[in-house]
Length: 159
Image 1 (cartoon, rainbow, N blue to C red):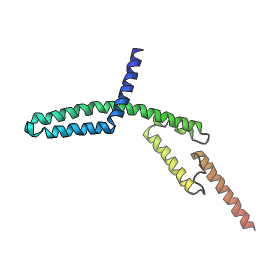
Image 2 (cartoon, rainbow, N blue to C red):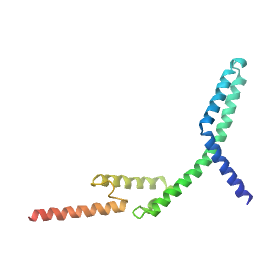
Image 3 (cartoon, helix red, strand yellow):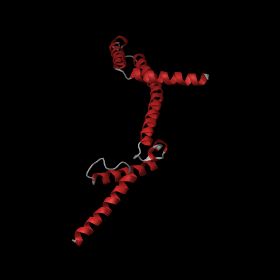
Image 4 (cartoon, one colour):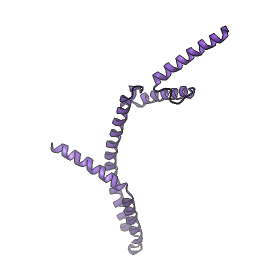
């Protein structure tokens, strides 16, 4: 139970720090620190120690912020993936192939991308951009329309 509380604390902490550091106030504060450091340069004769202060400070802050922001980003990405999965799973015309897309390999993603390129090309041939809802449905609609065109052409030829 204690580990769970520590994880929840770290998640909340990471999220709050990421939000706070992305604010205008945080930027103004960081800019003020850099300006104050630059203004003090002449008082310290632009010494190596003076330069070391800003280098060390920014390195430490950057190192820690990378991990905090990544933790917050991981949680946000997972939440977005779950929301998108819910939308895909709940829509009757959506292709359920995409529910676990984040678990696929890069090669598998490229295959799906090719399908969507084909879907886009087929949609461009449609009268309405909202005609096709999934790859499978687009292929069925396209085949049906081709068949209807054949029958219409055969009917016109007979007349």
